[in-house]
Length: 415
Image (cartoon, rainbow, N blue to C red; front, side, top):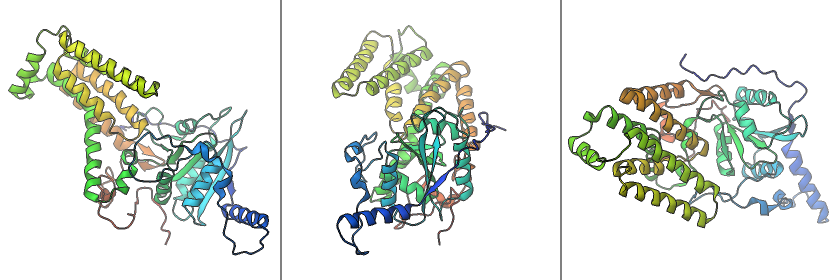
């Protein structure tokens, strides 16, 4: 009853299109036989040829959105068959299944569905295929067109399908029982289903040697998530309506720094957060190092000018800067963008209702997260479902010598 953004998937299925399964073993045998014939050798024990040799390796130059210390430097490209070949090489098992479908009425594009047959939940695979078949478009430019059409709730600010360019992340998802969706022409592959904790994970969590270090930085990211989403609204609620909740010395320092400022606190916060968002957009739109330096110089100049002209207070600068830095601790870009929108929503409600409005907005977001689902999987699993055994590889990272078994996506038992 509390899921305000529930999506009703009532669109008819395109019955004139269907999935076709790709025989990966047969394609591998054909490529091996072709290579042996070219070498003039008929021996069946000849070394198989690397199937990646015929693809444009130049297009596989990394486009890292995150700087990782360890892990594979290989990335997906715009070629769907090349991406499929990467998965075949990284998952050398006969249970790897790939199915293809053409979507688009005017200019059809190839879409690949990849999963491990003896691990993935077949009911989830069937649901993914059903939702993909409901997509009606002239053509598909990017995988985001698929992402927005197969999610349970398109009005929810939280993404329910994960996008990645890293093959090692995709392989890890396969062994969890998840499904990979590859669109020809897009380097971003989709991983479904998806939980909130998948969006907060990074490959460094698994590649870090000491489990205590990995757990510490994972918990730090959740603290930064709370700061990025709540700090501006909480600051407005405290100073505008409930200053008595602050310690006396801190309150006197803040009031002393705001002496003579012409604007109310909520206007100053909105002004500074708007400047921070403008600075963030400049950093994204100007790719060169010179452009980033100019953007940072402009931001620092505006802040210093505002402080010396007594338009804004130093305490507000600390809050906005901390919020700006904390938002970069969120690994997933879609989730990071959603948190920035939630920032302004909590700021607006807190400006009218104070601390009660801040608590109300936080409460409604928690309720929405606990009721949201991704292909039937609870979005906050295993936290919302209270699966304490799974917290060792979700909130923390256990000291395990083997890959932990994740039952979040209801996988089959391959044994």
